[in-house]
Length: 254
Ligand SMILES: [Zn+2]
Image 1 (cartoon, rainbow, N blue to C red):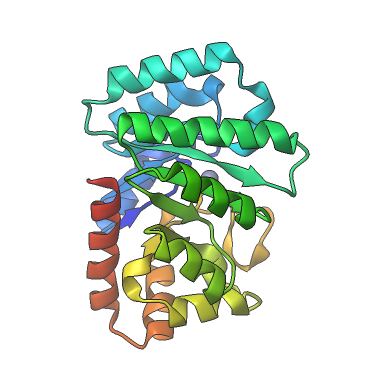
Image 2 (image 1 turned 120 degrees about the horizontal axis):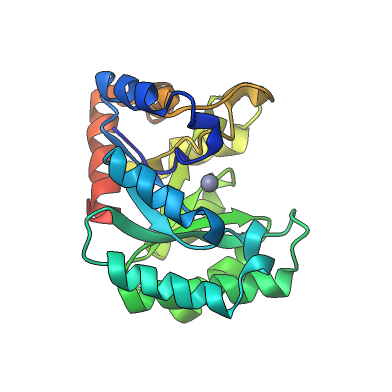
């Protein structure tokens, strides 16, 4: 298994990162993709990913869109050029749009589209954070049409919405929310869409299942998510596991 979205560089893991990675590998979670959130944390992200043999993306999360300056883009481009040939860099992001966040939406739009353009330029897939802005995101993806596509991470929408992304060639990132009994829409999506549509993720340390506020989430819940997908798809966990592995390695060219 590979966790396609885990913020293992966050301070939440400073105390036991090494032990966690060992535990992950002992239960068959070989690696994770660590997505970037803002410029200030790119150096630590790269350091953690390289030290623990994880993959990573580089980009600006919509919550930090207002912090992005001309200098941010110059340093992002320089880093992308520098890391392009390294096997660890696998995507641009996480980027996207979030209407529930206070950061200016026009700014979010321009920061998102700038990253779609970088995905085109550097031939990398996108890791997309999409909250209450699917119409705008679909429109940008259609008009700029990045060839490597990407993943809509932390998805919780309907089968109809998911199908719009899948029809454009995007994958749907399914995480711990699936384990919540109060996510019927997402359960329907996972039951109905073809299994080739999904990649596994946890969004650790956020998004702990069962809305538990103070409990840290980790990639160790991946087998539970996998089992839930197997139940909803009425297929064996082994088959789902193989397909999820092939989906994530294909999308990110791992
Ligand atoms: Zn994230």
